[in-house]
Length: 395
Ligand code: UD1
Image 1: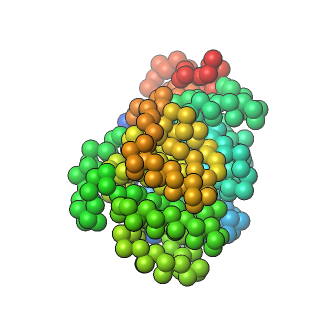
Image 2: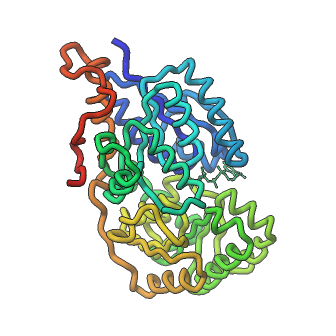
Image 3: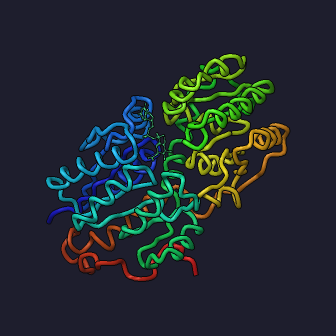
């Protein structure tokens, strides 16, 4: 009997830690054949290969190598290359995660080839359509057959957009599966010693969103915040290639060199970054994933954005939305440094078992009858999963 063949798509850095636990859970289910396809949206060693090494992901079965480009160009190139591969791969399911350009590109190709689409981390909304990721999220959710969500706010968003409830499953957070699995290993990283940092005595910063780094004045304002913080304690700033390019373009790299205790470093690997997060006094970021990871770790986070698509990190977690005003970001970070950081709790189902739940749903609905051992009871996947998904649907 043939296996249930699932193509798992990764493209950019935040995808790797989401697919790793899914691939592992699929591999543990006899009857599923999981493949990993890398579009090549991120290609630098430190943005890609290092993550495969640290997360135990296999070498991708397929590498499309599309690289960078404008949104249209990048999305288009992924679609053309992915469609070609799909002719030979002929999977039963295509699984995409998150909200990057590779997510929507591969999603569109899959559904037009009548292959069922699985979206992991569905339903998150910033309600800010100027964010490229928001457009990717809304559109991917509209065409997906299975939508797996990380928090309950996503269920309300999807309902509002008319997505049939029977497609939606609240399962928890696969990125936190990876974090919990690797936390202990990360604790043995030597990165703090290498950077001359001591636990709880430094600020960790990441900035890469176009809204923060593509405008000279906005970026200059954020750098002033880093300067002021570095006068209080060391600031470590692993720099995304987009941000590095913008600093050079705006001739702002000189400003940073003037701050004595600011450590500008290349992007860190998964384990080193996890160690840095886990031991930071406060994290200042505009990333989506880091808001969730700090909440799971219980480390205070100040988010340099006006909105978040992950509201549970604010309502239950350690995250504070500070907007883009340098004064506000500095004030919030100083509050944490002064010992008035927000305590939080780990959200529901962020327990390290989300990937298992997802694979169970897919196997029960798509795999067991057609690809399982003789005597399976269910017929091959109803066109849509039956109503009342078993995991914590909002009542
Ligand atoms: C992408 C995602 C964003 C995610 C981020 C994490 C979209 C729309 N955005 O943004 O959601 O939070 O990844 O990093 O998909 N570059 C390199 N080397 C690389 C990759 C990129 O030098 O390996 C440079 C290139 O100059 C490129 C720029 O970074 O033009 C931006 O890369 P791109 O993939 O377009 O978007 P990100 O800003 O990384």
